[in-house]
Length: 195
Image 1 (spheres, rainbow, N blue to C red):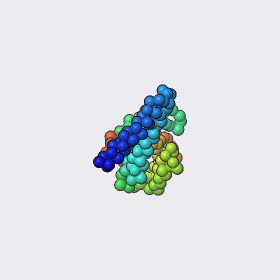
Image 2: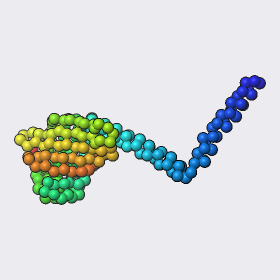
Image 3: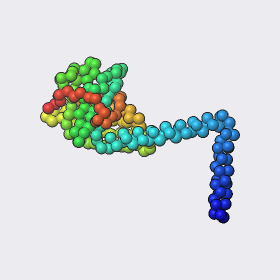
Image 4: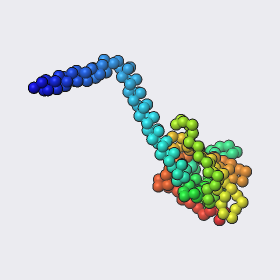
């Protein structure tokens, strides 16, 4: 019987103590409640951002991704939206494909653009000093049978948005777009110009 009395006393005490934080929260002003809610939302956004960063970092570290260009910025100035399915950088199993096809470019890859494909060389990966800095990869491809070399640098933010700088034959331009997994990519590759 003593055990039952102790148990009921503990339950009653626990119930009284448990009700106090709820009652204290009910005594908060609307401003304080909004502040608490805002803080909870901020923490949830930060957690989601870190999860997305981990996903994109894994793609970059494993060299298993596609960057789909959405906009091109030319050295002479100006920018234009571009088709994501034919303007991309793709890396898989130590091989790289860099393809671009935008207005004003006439190339022989069967799509009117340029396609460079070959072994990935001079690869580097920088995860950034903290979670607010962009992750950066760089490398180059020297297509078989060609003296041409395509050098690229890709910076990616936590949400997968990226900025790709391409250098080819003393000419450079940049594209902005989205990093995706190979499975999510919707690309169409032309024939390599340098085979």
